[in-house]
Image (cartoon, rainbow over all chains, first blue to last red; front, top):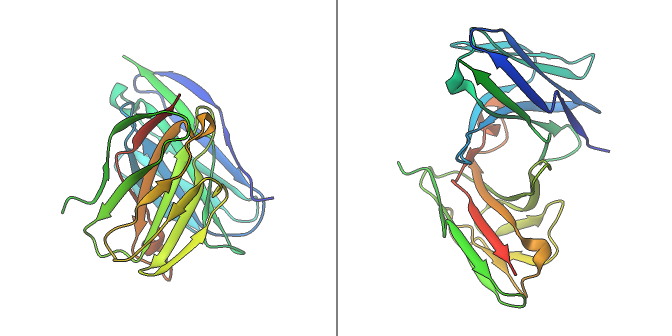
Amino acid sequence: KNEVEQSPQNLTAQEEEFITINCSYSVGISALHWLQQHPGGGIVSLFMLSSGKKKHGRLIATINIQEKHSSLHITASHPRDSAVYICAALYLTGNQFYFGTGTSLTVIP
Amino acid sequence: NAGVTQTPKFRILKIGQSMTLQCTQDMNHNYMYWYRQDPGMGLKLIYYSVGAGITDKGEVPNGYNVSRSTTEDFPLRLELAAPSQTSVYFCASSPYQRVLTSYEQYFGPGTRLTVT
């Protein structure tokens, strides 16, 4: 089954804390997509990766193909990082993304 | 570029009514998608299209229809609306699926639909 699981479901952090959000998938993938959904509902793409690590500002995404696991890290978190973070997997056998249920992050000043 | 636009933003339908959700992209993307997002659930794919004239079913196509007569437009039709179709609907597009960066999806702002 093409499942994508995220943990934790909810996360509250103090400003400046280092944050990790996890994503696991079940079989081989072509690509792993990290997205951010703002409190107003809009969805934006953060990273697309198939191996290794990518960095953009304070955000870092990593993927371990052997362990079928990806992480999204936020360094020096800020209240404006408060959002739902979603991962989605594009499996080798198909041409559609399967989405996790999201991690709701709240960063407190 | 406006990116991906959706109309309407909000809509309330009565059971049995029909409506069309509009989606337009101005990025000349080949791939377009319709998703629904229910509370506590991940985005579910309803239909997708790999180019004008070509559409295919996703995970949850029942109760919906699509067409793709142009590269820009990908409307989603709800026939005989039911309360189970109450959801937030997102349209998305991506260039194509050959190199990694081209899988990236660009989302519209969403349409919040309530069926009562």
